[in-house]
Amino acid sequence: MSISYQDETAEERAVRIDDILKKNSSQGVCISCLEDIRGDEPMLETIHGPYHDFPKACIEGRPGFE
Image (cartoon, rainbow, N blue to C red; front, side):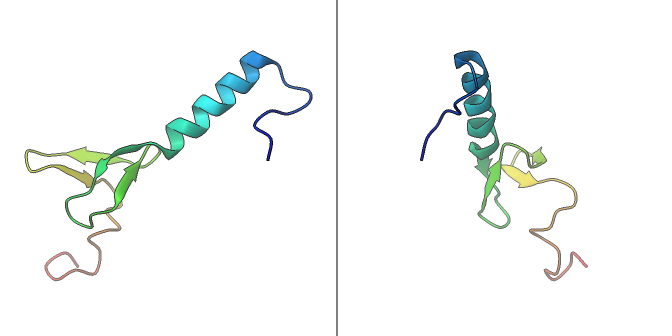
């Protein structure tokens, strides 16, 4: 697997790789579902720790959150 395309410049490759790393980087671990919150997922920071923000799929279906 190649990390560069034949027709892209070094600058374009750096931007593309930075974008991939940002999308796959973890912002933290949701204290509700204990899953990583990835770079493109909304996050709600609280005094208790980070949660997945709206639509809060990690807490849907749990008792008290219907």
